Image (cartoon, rainbow over all chains, first blue to last red; front, top):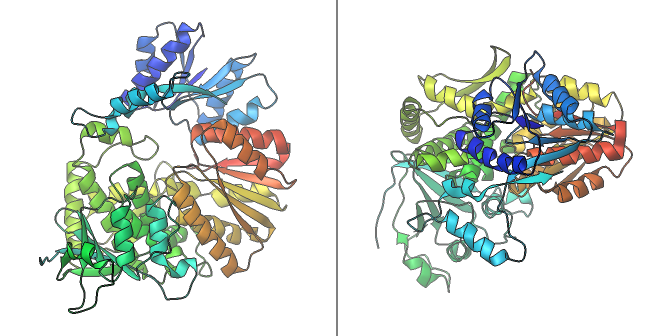
Length: 151
Length: 419
């Protein structure tokens, strides 16, 4: 169960790459998006055809979004947040999964270090961040990748 | 020896008096912020100045040659958040003896005079905003400083005006209009510096929750004009009021004809403050007259203005006496402003003679850390109200742990505008 909020195009593409890895692990993906995040959802869906996407609407969006996520993930599923999901939705999800068999996870941006190869991994991160002119380029930050963080 | 004259706004930071005590030593607090809290600084200057160029928005840091210890320390240590165009050492009096040891190094940078069109005095936070870089945190610091300068206006617009509660600007004996001018100059100089960065770098630094788009060309042009005029001493009176559009929202107004830039600043700096509209009723209903603790999860754009508004809410709702402790929870990114806000909270509690214990905890987006912090905070049996504003993964694991431990005694309110 992936909660898709409004994302910048570049970030949406990075999320897509991270979700592809989950799909390749055999996980079923359901994308829950809103009117505001339909563009981000389209980008993700364009790369993962088999993902199911569902739009959340209603007067009380926090309530609707959280209820739908919990209902779909019940029975051993995982609720995955990407980007900046509204805090009201997050709090309601935590309240609703209390005592239920539902896992929480978040995609966060941080370098993925290979086991026992810390220095080599660090070296590759630094070389990505260093632009062609040798100056650190903030825009390269997103090339480092997103990692799934289970909570 | 060269001689320069800066055509710009001189922003001055000065210690209140020689007495020891954190709020008397404004320059130490500035160094604390600029070094991300890494310097335990007994090195200080009684007066530090920054000059914002009226045409380019570039900032020069100006220090008296008498502050030789600070100069040497600044030269020797690259300061993480500080990013100024020039570092100027000023020999203020002819024939004044330079302190032994510092003389040779300082002599290289000596100039004769710095002439400014206008001088204003500001708090350490506004000074830090002016001297910080054009990255996302630098942007956040400028917004936090602007919010702080407008704290009384914001509280008044929300209906939380309370003359008993001293704003951070009061505590540093800084005139409010000067603080607004200084913070505004910090924000406008950021706009000008930011517009020079390449688009990809800007996109990577902005977040959807803070600002969705760069300032437009029209907004930028008005910003340049506004900076030039405040550098020449024109007073930009900023007022905050509530408007009813789709929902109630705080809006910034200015008597001068700067509608585009005022709207932009309003959107960027006041957008998050809309979270405080209606918050009082929500806090009151969660507390239900019982003794409670408050845990405030700091985001990178929170600062002393948030503390001012929260304490104002507790006072106006008559629940300050029921509050036993207030935890400010920072993450590595928000650590300096959260800690600075904790100093301010401590001072407010002392001023208002409240029986609240101010506490600070450094947490992290890593669930292993946030769980530990949440366990520590929930070790009592008292009701705990969690104000959530931090990063997503932090909010999830933190609140989950609070609920597991305190069950129905834990509740949470998102610090987002009420729908």
